[in-house]
Image 1: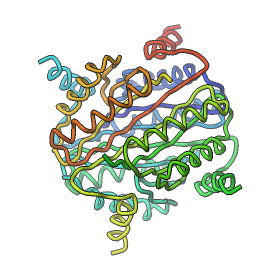
Image 2: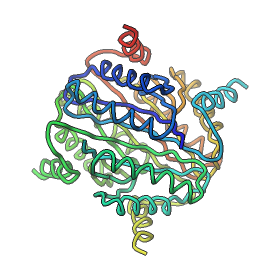
Image 3: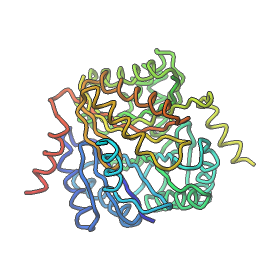
Length: 100
Length: 100
Length: 100
Length: 100
């Protein structure tokens, strides 16, 4: 089962700057060979369910190891069985209609 | 790693009534032996990361099998390594201060 | 337009304990006369769109005043025009089918 | 109070294709003069709290008018009082560290 997931990790107890934790997660997704797209409030990730969710778990483990005692992350999870759709397809589908 | 997760599943392409899909998910969580608490916009689930996320995956599979061609779910995921905290602890911590 | 909203506020830069900030928000919702239900990962709120969203804004203002330099909150927002549905209706609809 | 908001609207009861509703929302944000960035699972919006949240309300009203009987949207809301930070700042902060 393929998933398009939107992930936003928020470490608590480590001050207001969270970018280094986001960077650590980006590296985990890259090393896992997953397609990702960073945006201003999270990261889109595309891949097989198990691989993507394994990477999300590794993010929590890594960010705790980096010193965050508590993490609250939010996820949107999209699956569909009617047809194959990539992250790029989703964006193109909106942009085509916008530019008409 | 223990997680407190808040799960809200939204099936698309099956009309406006989603309660039977939520019921199917509740049964999956119960059968997995997970502690859950239903609320008006999702379900709180407490347990080991792998067990909880496995149940979430089963929900997507089941809801697709029930006929939903597309699913968009949202999740909040809380982990902490500084101390053990249950769902009930979290609620009690707020209610104690509220009633002062 | 009526809304059922699920609100989870996460203050950053104030350590790992967030319950006093949640308590401050609960008081704002109560003083606004809104129906709410606290759960382990947020609060369900029911009411007119403008009143509910005004209270959410007051929560951000209050939590900043209490000392949080940064806030990241998450919201689920449900509206429907086909029929009236309360938070209690939503839960009852699931529980009836669960107990069959 | 400035906000960076991430918005994902999910209309129910109108089938599996949601892009035309997303397009309608993009137009609302553009006409409101708000800075936005579309991604594969939502839209980042930056602006004054009241203007951004007014546009979000207009999205729900518009999508109902277009025929969706029910809507479930999700929002991430970030505010900070320690310093000014744009959507572009957030992305740059991560990308600088990633490319080191």
